[in-house]
Length: 251
Ligand code: BEZ
Image (cartoon, rainbow, N blue to C red; front, side, top):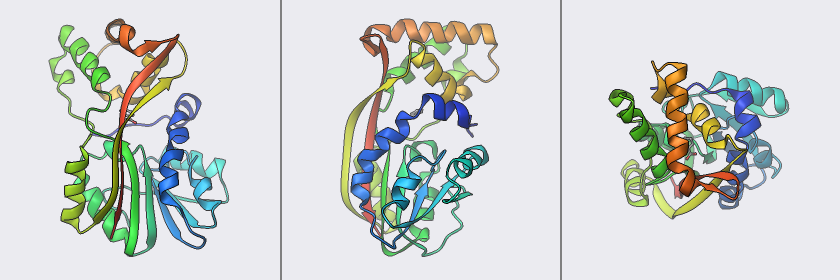
């Protein structure tokens, strides 16, 4: 199952993705001259930060639209379209950095094998993405609202990959990585504006509304808002119940 990305909407309303990426950046510690892959760079907001350290960076993303926007925004940086499950690199990078991407890749073993193959020996991955129980309450409210209006099939779509540290570290070790650092933490994430939750659902959960009319969709969105308002609308702002896993591992 694939996700279509609207690069303009992503930049306008979801810039928090890049802002939160700064935490994981502190784990990367790029060195001058290192060759670093920014895996799933989106519209490229963190890529120049890596380049500014004196490292040489390549940003890749599976979305042609995101890559086109990244190239237009940062013409001096190298970007190319590539699939995390099948990266076209071999022993090339000192480090792979990835923020808020790997939960979209359900074929996680392929992504891990592909990262391993792309790294030089001794190279490292520094990755952060949705961990076990990420957006659990939003996901539950979405499923319940779909079921309630008779869309059981849509409610059963299995889409994201949110592992625990134990599960992900095991997969990395099976591939040959040595896991040197891992954290799993809450990251309550404010969503912009009064329609923040609806906008987030429209941006990221389109797949769950496949085949559902605009009128029904609106009713489902309102039901989700009604259910989550008491817990997820705080001081006039929607807050998503994100949980993150952050891992560093060495080839
Ligand atoms: C996340 O970054 O955790 C996420 C983003 C969109 C949909 C689901 C999860």
